[in-house]
Image (cartoon, rainbow, N blue to C red; front, side, top):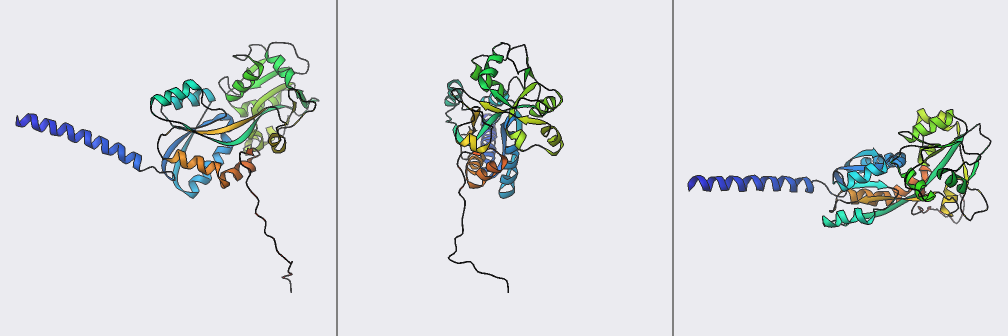
Length: 304
């Protein structure tokens, strides 16, 4: 009996230690302190690098950014290997049901408006494109002026976006190509006239130093959308006014289920400082940061 009692006590002690250990891990993370992993859609990486750097400098926090295609980000998110993600879409009903079964309600925070940019070699005479021609080409029809379309990754958010626009389930085999990254698309278009690249706008507004020469070798095309009579470039003003046809919202999806770094980071990006970072990046903040003006009754001359 004495041996049995000791065995029971040992088992209880082990379970109690594990429970306390897991509790300590959770308690070590707050909304502004601790360690977390952030999954980022590859088309949105540049601006999130800036957000993470400034967030870490201001708070006692460390965020590990993992960059993947949209499909891979969502797969990783629902497998619970990470619980914070940056996406250009909300979770669909099937994905939400997975978290509902875990008694978790994902918090979706809109943070910016991005654009799917169409790029072409700078030596090309065509700097404008009608979206109906792009859709026609993606449906396998011969379209004058479009030699081919180049995407970053078959699982990327830009592919999904353009497929939805064209009403197809997968990119066609003829005339449509995919590489591994947005930078590879930019380099390819820089070297090949007549090919139209499809990339996230942020890769063009914030290129890395080694990519600047390739970005200088391409032109961002102006696009005419459905029911539009003119062509519009993907700049902040046209996105804000709803004129650019290929604009999309960006979200932080927080599935932590507790008040951790996911909540703190989302609040930071959606707040004044985070929105100013987005504004500087060339994307459109979800909330335009206010300008502070200092008004004086008179102008004084400090010079003597």
